[in-house]
Length: 153
Image (cartoon, rainbow, N blue to C red; front, top):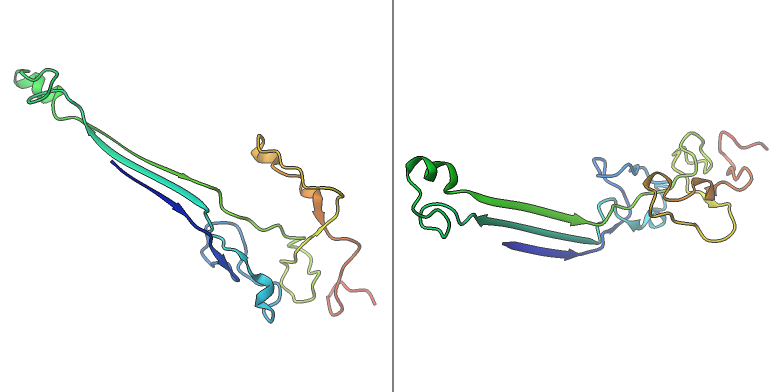
């Protein structure tokens, strides 16, 4: 048997082109990479791995059916059971304001949202399809930056 546990934290300022999540790899403002610092797309805080191989004690030289004749020995002897278990925490994800509208004026379409609902974000761990209310995030007013194609002056 072999077991291992890893506790880690991945931080970066740019996602991976071939990342393991749906996070986009385009920064909001390529001139300010410090604003992009956060959990990496491959950040898994906890990982437990266990692997084992167990010889089944049946057949020649074992406690059960140790004197089994030819065909029985071929059928019941020499078996083993093995397993690999990999338990990990989930990957982080990024909430975007709207990937169809450029609020920032940087032509990136990956703007960060505002919190538009009062109070704390409610988490529903029992419903993976409704883990949190996406209406909690959005844009307050128009929030278009000067120079944006959507900016009304």
